[in-house]
Structures are given as structure tokens and as C-alpha cells.
Image (cartoon, rainbow, N blue to C red):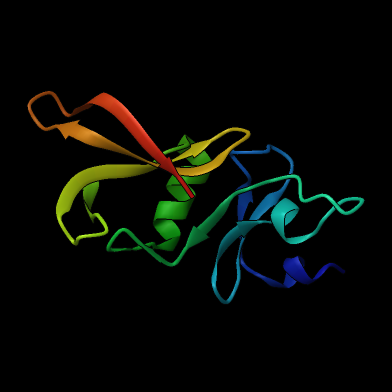
Length: 116
């Protein structure tokens, strides 16, 4: 049995579509990132437990797996300035942050992302 089978599993990876999202001691990660195939890691998805001032929860990870994004939330930038954003799982890329939220229509009117 693979080591990752002993870890809590959250579903199929929304980025690569073949690995499984598991919770490790340091992050939530795709098994295709943990275990290389012929020396190549085939997925980039890794979600730290704490990022942009947000303590990532199991429910947030389930949202990413099921919907490809989380609900909008208050995050902080590197200068600890708050902003409204959300995490998104981008197929073939990994975790990104989408920001510039417009509360009037509850939409992200300008899509800017930063990849992790």
C-alpha cells in the first residue's frame, strides 16, 4: 500500500485530474507531486496550511477539489495589507490567488493571479 493511502484523502486533483489530494504534515498536496513517475513530478498542486494570512481548512480544500475555487475571503499581502481574494486551482498549473474583488456585484472584475 502506498504511503499516501494512509493519509486523509480529499478527492481527485483539480489540476492534473489523475492524482489524489492528501493532507501531509506540512500541506495539502497532489500525490502526483509527492511521487515522481520516471523521475518527473507530474503535478504542481501544493496548498500550504497557512498562506496569505489564511489558515487553510479541510473544507476549503474540498471546495477547491469540487468547485476549483474557494469562496471569497479576506487575505493579506506580503505587507500584511488586507484584500479580498480567493484560491483557485488552475488545471495544468497549480494553486493561484485571484483578487480584485468587486463587492457591489460579488464578482472578480479584474482577474489577477499569483501562482504557488
